[in-house]
Image (cartoon, rainbow, N blue to C red; front, side, top):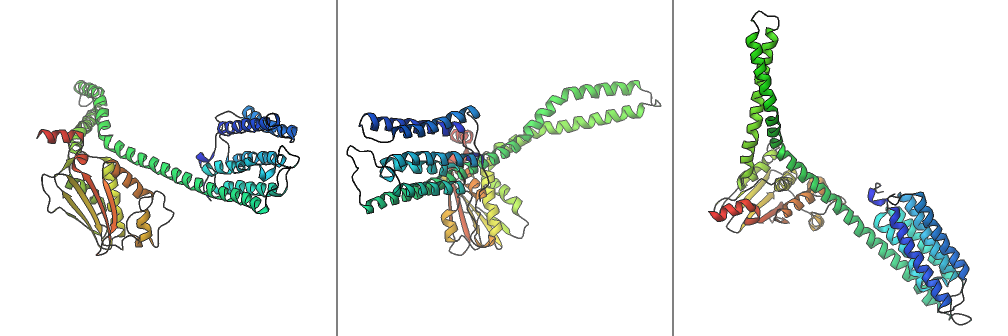
Length: 433
């Protein structure tokens, strides 16, 4: 069973507006049939049912704020009413013969977009039960003659079957599309959080330098006052030891602040330019020493080695793919780096079992239902982690391809246009040179 989600709590205003639209349509239909076509049918009873729906709308609006979100149970009850009320109207106006019988499936379709499966199933069964009841029990269809024309039983059965099949197809389709959209939204949200975290970590040195700068002036004053106290305090005075301690500790604080101040300059210089091979070495370094040999190869390259700005998304995405290769490798992971005047490519190879066909067709989808077989028998990364890595790399302009090697193992190719990897500032500098 799915865990309750905030997105499954529908806003009350949404449901009341939909019911207002339904009330308007029902009223217009009754008025048109009764006083334009002059077909006889239980007009008073129909308007009483419409008034009941209107009364529920008014009560909900008075009882709750417009921004109130109903629980899944409350949504199920409200939508059950939205099935039973039209079913009662259809009972008075021809049952399943009424062309508007198709509207019985609308509440179930709305629930399919937001509610858990049990709610959707319950409302669907209620709609099917209502359609089945209206197939056999109903008032005559309003018509100009004394009796409406009789329809063949096979045709009536087709009407019922059409409603049921449409209900089943529409609810399943909408539920699957909405579930995938929610999973994608959650995964993209997780991607943004990961990227934001990496950027915050990269900015910590700048914050430290700013803090050191702000603390420098008051600390200099403290150090000056401490030295003056040291000159004015005799060596045999009871407070001499405390004054010496204050002087040494203030000097220590100044040394710490000097290091913090220089940290930003050194880090900025390191962050501004990151050669491609340094980038690959950086993402592979945390995964060495775990019994899997990691080799970086750079052969047959033409032109100067690309130099890029440190990109948190590229570092995280490439590191995640290397980590997955190490997880499923038997003994060896190879990182082949190639560049020319047009493109830059990093090929991650492992000697593991590779991807199964089922996994290979879905790899990169967020929240994959399960791994195929044992964790070390599928090769490569699956689920949200790989989706985040793939999203971040593609955002940097990369093209990613997953495949199996003929010699055994998995292969992941990450390729950028050289201009996309350089970044705007470095592209301009390269053009000047």
